[in-house]
Image: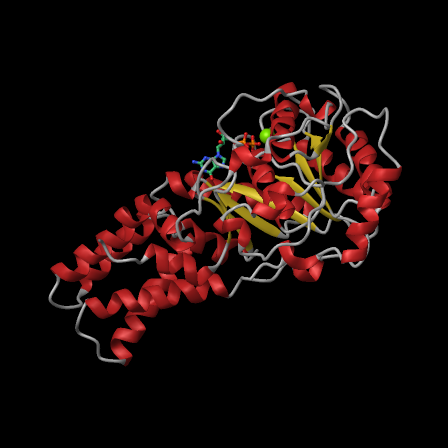
Length: 402
Ligand SMILES: Nc1nc2c(ncn2[C@@H]2O[C@H](COP(=O)(O)OP(=O)(O)O)[C@@H](O)[C@H]2O)c(=O)[nH]1
Ligand SMILES: [Mg+2]
């Protein structure tokens, strides 16, 4: 569904030109300066199967392939020449994507699908009692009031129309309806991809939802498909925020534009956009603050950042990605409305689906926000991010008990 990672492949002459540039005009002086880490494009699937060997050995791409285990020097972006040992990180072929997804959704499956199975298997006929229990299961899995109502009405209608009497038939009906609710709001992100200049993604969301982590994971995906990435630490409210982004910069071996704690986030973004355009980065990922509890108006700050980006590059930001923590349920949806009013959300990354029994929130989000879910986070590691695919997700959710 999502073509971001294949979209801006560099032509051979482009990458030759880039390598030539790197040879003839070494970057000097500027803190943290580094040429875009560009690689030969690799097939889109490669990032989920394994980090391609080719990328690991490419001089222009110095990925750290053991990203999550070792301590990291947070100032390392000031020394971009630090080489990683490319051989050290031969990445094992991971399990099939679907197996991994379904393993990570186990908590939701236990509380949702398996409870549905118990209900349907335990009942001989479809009656009012069954619909009551069904309602309770749907609400508990965080499908939300509207989606639950929609599903129940749909099920009742179909039971009547098709004169269904076997409760087990209801499971297929629900699966079909949930898929169609989610698919209705799927929308490819490609249309936003610019012909010229960097693709700018502004990442927003409240503290702790997983913005910085998601940026780190997305960066890896872009690098693996041959794009150069610039990270921008526009959460200047806490020093820890930009150090955390620097760590992800180090893990991916990409440059991070940052300033001191308390700096004006718009000025960080201004500098970063200047660099991105001048050095022809393919992708700019902007991390923003998420405090909702202070008097300093976060929404005004975000609006200003958005304006600054747009002034420097027509049409940018091309994506305003809201990160929602799946474990926060309805709260996440209320947050989304706030952010949407302020800056206009164009896509959603839903994190921590591995840690919740409330994975039904996917349908709730599709129904309530009508904004496409681009990614789902299914763990804390660098490759625990998936492009969202409604059919795949619902199949994993409805997988029968082993
Ligand atoms: N289990 C799990 N944890 C996640 C996921 N995404 C982020 N986290 C964790 O959530 C916590 C907050 O993430 P962070 O990126 O700092 O959030 P931010 O404040 O929005 O930038 C960290 O401990 C992350 O490791 C996910 O998909 N699954
Ligand atoms: Mg953060």
